[in-house]
Length: 102
Image 1 (cartoon, rainbow, N blue to C red):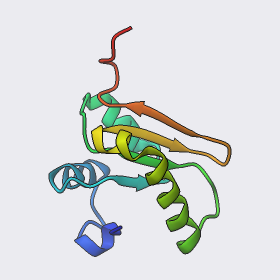
Image 2 (image 1 turned 90 degrees about the vertical axis):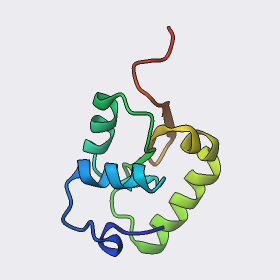
Image 3 (image 1 turned 45 degrees about the horizontal axis):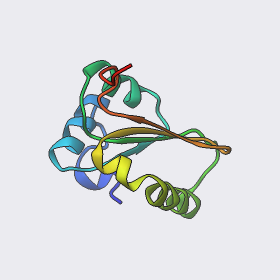
């Protein structure tokens, strides 16, 4: 796990963070809904994004949560997915959004 500040992206825009994640084959974990919107609107198939919708998580608790999400959703995340995590559930939407057959 790498924080944006550790790789020179502390002041980068959301689009720049997504581009770097895509180039480096990383998964973005965030509290920000904008990342899901940007990926959905772009019709991109990567990078995967995990959006955490649980308030007040800090350091170790967040790391443990992300580890549980990784184990639960590894295959989806490796293929390209938007994952939303709440206190009650984990929702997965496969990428690219809007191209799945009906």
